[in-house]
Image (cartoon, rainbow, N blue to C red; front, side, top):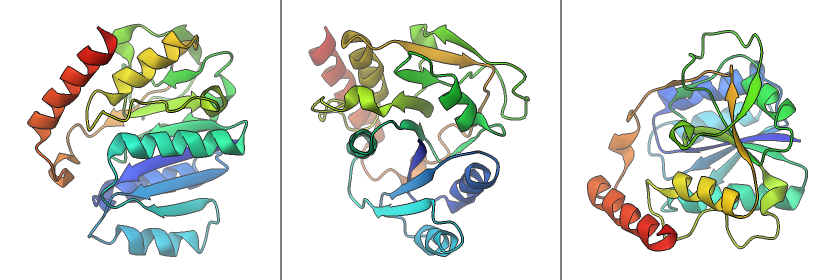
Length: 219
């Protein structure tokens, strides 16, 4: 089973094209929208789109932190069983059939990141899974083998607020014996910082707190 999950807050101009590309231009079994308190037309648009495609699911996650949403996505997918779960920012573009191709090529890997050296417009001619170099960790578009986390308390330490949780996830996976990879050939475009205005906290302060949390856990 292939599931894509997207945490969102407003910015429907980014969310809607991504949702359409996944429902129409990919092969996924379900698409979960985790709405972190949108005040624009996000909920209205998703509710209407759900009427024409039952694969689309909506969850109200107002005031829920980003990594708590990630943990819930992974836990829910693990409970379903045999799920390849793509966790995606809403401010991205992916090539045609990206998620299905990633799921088909996961092999023994437990986390797979996209190839940031290629664009979403570059065709997927061939795909190669390469053991992940730390610099190639990608927190805005990756896939997990949800079964790997089935008996774990969490995938991301609950102390993380905003920024270092993806580092924690990849490091934790490797510590627990899971291999991580980069899917060479599956490109992406990322609208860097396009959704930052929706963050209600103190971004720089919370990033620093997360950095200190990472040091505390992993040093």
